[in-house]
Amino acid sequence: MDVFILSLFLLTIRGVSAQTVIEPQNTVVLKGSQARFNCSINQAQTGMIWLLNGRLVVTIQQTEVKISNSRFAVTNLTSPGSYKWEFIINNVVRGDTGQVTCQILDEVAQISTLSVQERGSVVIIDGNQTATEGVQKTFQCQAVGWYPEPTVSWSVNGVGVNTCNNNSVAQGNVFNTNCTLTVTAAKSSSVQCLAKVPAMSTPDSNTVFLTVVPKASTRDQTILIAVTVAFSAAALLFLLIVLIIICCRRKREKSSYEEEVRRAQLQAQHRSRARGDGHGHDNRGYARDGHYGDNYNGGVWHTNQSNKHQRAYPMDDYNGPRNHRHLTMV
Image (cartoon, rainbow, N blue to C red; front, side, top):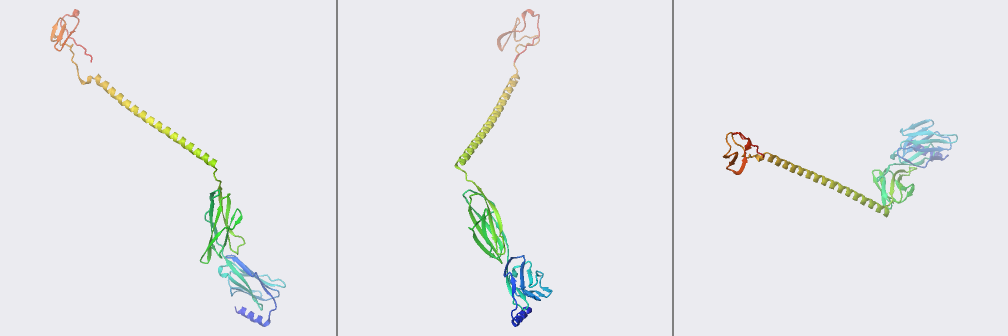
């Protein structure tokens, strides 16, 4: 700073003898990039200083160069008839915004303006969408973390659309901007949201796609209804047939079971009759040895229980008492 004051003092005494030029006059760059300035005079000189926002950062005396910070650098571009140096600021930060001053000894200081801006992100939060022809769809774009407030716009199939409702909110030292677009689905299209600040030569963008489905015609709807009804009727008929088959099987199984029960009962009854139901019968044709019943008369006997006459044996073959056993059929 003392050098700068001394230069102004010497300039006041000696007067202006040459023209100092600084380029560019105004520089806008993105945070993290480089800022470059050229300072020149049309006659030979031996010294130059650079100041950033009033703070001395570079001193050049003949061939000796002093730099206060590693982010700063200078390049000697001097040629015959032109004393010229380039001042470079690497990895610029928001705090670098302000004045950049070039001072050649014994000459008037030249000032340029530096503006540092920030690039944020841009995204369409709705993503890809599908809509029926003629239906309106809404897309919302968010540009977050920009400085200064970004310009947000839309394009559909590469054609700019101006219908964008911007809504920006400052958050700390950056801006967040929302932009909404409403379109009527006419055909499948690419939808693009673009955001930029003056330091950018081309905007950042995010692209999604709108797929448009044609409206169904009345004929198509009729065919769809007919197919649906036919399918439903076929399904109902199939279900009815299945139910009938199940019912018939169950009825047949029940009949078979009842038939088996009746058959088993009849077999049990036949076996019971064959055994005589557990009771014996008198054999009235039996006579003990030497005895022929209660009343015997000439080979014919009578019982007290019956008036029937039964012949015990043939009379012609009788030669005396015999033992007889008679078979009783049950």
